[in-house]
Image (tube, rainbow, N blue to C red; front, top):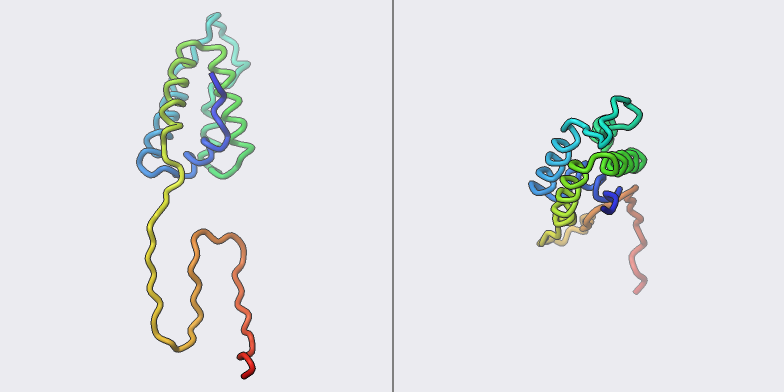
Length: 138
């Protein structure tokens, strides 16, 4: 199976995809919390079930290092637990269908004429500043 992408984990942990995304994240959480069954019935705790990594990503959903740690834990667990691998593969296929980018139709109307300052934008990262230019010369 392909590793679960860091981008998908970050998006779902951050709430992308609306209700479908929440459902996918809940499904992954439930899957990770299932008992870890290693093929050799080993009793050692050398490998992570992914629960700790999941909890850490929940605390900081935009942290790509935490998402990478979860992706790695999922891949290792899938390699050691064939039942988990099958369920994770099914979850991953379904999660890839979640629309992570929502395109919204926005309509704005600006009226008046009193020279107010107006900004129309989607997502803004960083600062926005206003520079006032002198009126054009006639």
